[in-house]
Length: 52
Image (cartoon, helix red, strand yellow):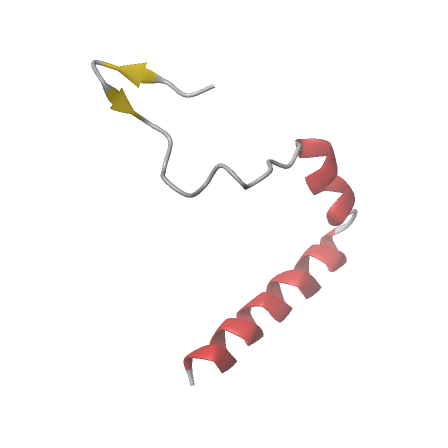
């Protein structure tokens, strides 16, 4: 639910379509340290190639 204080809406515009992720879902995405490392490396490589 949106927090409203003195007429100020704290929801960012255009973000209503996003769904959250639970801690359990996040933990299942990266069950061990090696999976986490591979994901971070792949993400960094993707960002680097997008910049150049």
